[in-house]
Length: 118
Length: 267
Image (cartoon, rainbow over all chains, first blue to last red; front, side, top):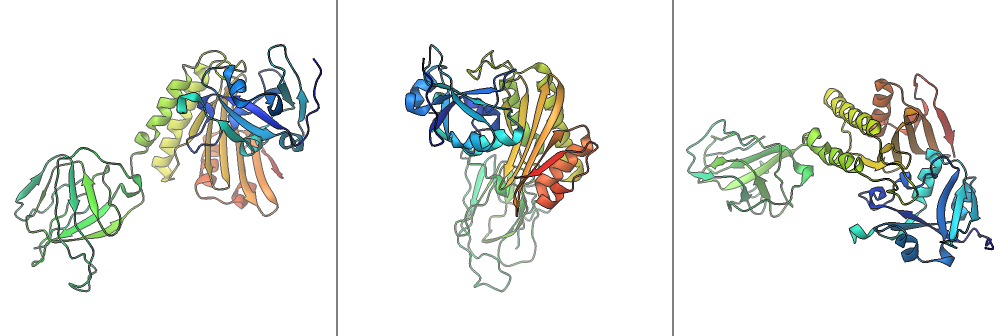
């Protein structure tokens, strides 16, 4: 599978369960952690998928979006990393300090609410 | 005859009570008018009582003092306002809702809201939903975040509960108005406790491997955003952070003196 170039203006989708949605409608910074024992946080490249497809992987999840420019400004790498079951799969690579996680949370918008809240 | 109601609807002095209201009640005492004198008391008099079922609980008026005065004499009755739930609605149509039995004089004709204090509700009750939420987090299955998260470990839960109880105790001893936090699970199996108010943000991350409580605080400064992060090692550090969040400034945050030097940066 050929990897796509991700531009700064590309939108990225991050799936989240309802437990990360705060009472004020914003997303907790806890939603922006790396996968355990890695430097990678999985996202989907929005132009290759839809919020519904991103959410469908795990029943009930919502989807947040942010621009690829945001993590890059925070010193993170953003790479298209397709996997057999998901060509849109991408990675935000780099250590996620609390400050970085909070900035990612502040720069994200909910594009699909967790289904339990609809 | 004056009837004053202030602070559990416990009647201290009872001038010939002729009406008894059980359980939930409503007192609606009409529009304010200053025409009857210079005291600022409200002039009207519609008294409506009801055994109606509960109403919205408006926390911002959870305690205060309300004076009911019926015309003609100087006698009055003091009744303590219950801790919860009661409220006074808008300035025109004033309604008091109360949960306890109270006896009111028949001739009550006018009323006055003496003062309203900030919320004084029981902090343990305020925090109950947080503890319930932590109980829910403890039951999350493997891969609850869809990215391979671990279940929240019991040790993190226990330490989180202890920390929250310390916060409740801190409020009791210091009077800090500690807001109710949001508690989120961490993919690593820990939990995160967070508060946000305007430009201020405070986060405590409790993890078990290794066992740490990490803090992250942020506030706006002229140059951008001041952030402070490190490991929390003492109750005094927790107190200092909470104190800053409740009433401190970015300058206070910049001058924190923890046992271990935190990492501070402006970005």
